[in-house]
Amino acid sequence: MSAPQILRIDTSAQIDGSVSRELSDILASALAGESGRVTVRNLATDPIEAVDHDWVGANFTPAEERSEAQKAVLAQSDALVEELKAASDIVIGVPIYNFAIPAALKAWVDKVARARLTFRYSEAGPEGLLGGRTAWLVVASGGVPVGSDVDFATPYLRHVLGFMGIDDVRIVDAGRWPFLSEAERDAVRALAERPQEVARAA
Image (tube, rainbow, N blue to C red; front, side, top):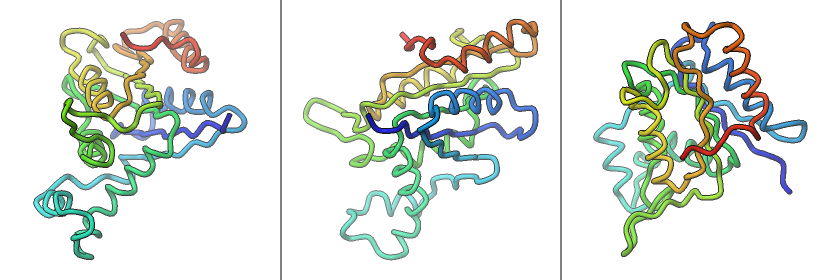
């Protein structure tokens, strides 16, 4: 069995004191073990450019017809896709901002959800191309209960990851963190240290 290759994506705008960063660090280290490797993509310190007119034009130009300028426009996206393809597990820190995901994370999704690279359309409909991987969502919130009717972050990510073929999605629930007792917080930290106990999302 090959060593685990963990892609950790930090999306919180908060550097110090971020709950999603703390728990993602614990979880990614536990998944990697002694032999694995963790690649960190920090969207706060290394932000991803938003999709624009030039990017859309380059993306929809057949690869063999792209100009050097178009290749340069797609370079960041290409690198993000390769990181995703190389990973056996993806740990995504997901602070809930205004009931949904941070804009930084949406920018990442827009750059990796690419037809012919991470999904394709067939006669049977869309087909994800990234099967065989596990995604771990470390979901933290100030007041939104994870999985509730006002949590629009978790279902969106489960859907878009599944669209790319990653249907094994597991959730570390750090919702309503300010309202948890220290014992409850320690229980969440302990669960992040034991990823084998994190159930697959239904």
